[in-house]
Length: 436
Image 1: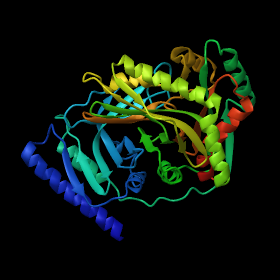
Image 2: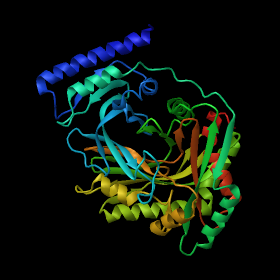
Image 3: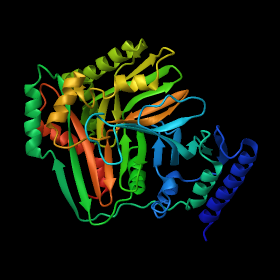
Image 4: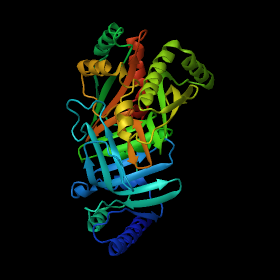
């Protein structure tokens, strides 16, 4: 037995002793959480370690990995003591993970309904250089259940690179259908100044795909993003490496951003700088971003918030760079996370403007169901919340992965150029999968 196995077993044994002591103090059904500091433990390998036993122990599901954009909080959660089909209002030490589909009408993906939030059974968490475990209790789940689930955990397993395999690729819409869609959207310009059209690219391989391995490689390639894996059953995993924040709330202070407008990265520093300047000076891109800014500001003001915008800046990722305008707001005391989510999601950066006609156009004309792609994924507690827009995302099932990308269509958009933008946006994950 190797050293890592002994180390993990020592952590398990210590946590079980702490749970038993907690039981003596607060009874078998506590109504408060137990927070414990532990030695460091690798979180993605810990989640991967449960692949073998997940079918025998459903208490390990859902499995969720979440890392915020600043990389100051990383967590791995197992199980659920609550599952909600609405946006929760957290009180005391309650903490929820989950999200909303792109649209809350119509049929969604299997395992991913219109709205789903869970309060985890237990959370392994890294804050800066401190590791913790939080056992959640609400008065109806027992300490024995937490002990049983903890005992069923297997040791972390090493993460590995994806081995290139033969694959089949299918795009929906096809390139020809895409050209027709872009043309149709431009015809509607009087009613729809902007609509975001998207594509699903499905890759099927000879062997299965491990979500945890893929996430590890993806977050190494694009570190300054949200990183998350949501696995609500053993059938599917939704993963994302999203650069876009929907909003972050600290008490009544809210930070959000207008992220719209994209150009490539350059092949050298000079070309990169030229492309960056073109992003800041392009009138079409400025118009596209301004639409998103206006939407966010207007909706925050409807909630009686005080709003301030910072100057435009450029967000650089591995293969593309985006125009970004940071926005801050001060909320009234009665504004809840549900109010923010319903007002801000989906933004024109993933839907269009006006909101309802754009969503209807997408619903009527896109040949696939977006599900949680371009949805809102995040966490909620009483004093803070943080939500990502679920772009740069993928749905994994067995040996197939569906990749998603979108492009804003406004007057002056060219179908061929927008199709290339879609390819640029999934290039990082294509490289990880060995298909580039």
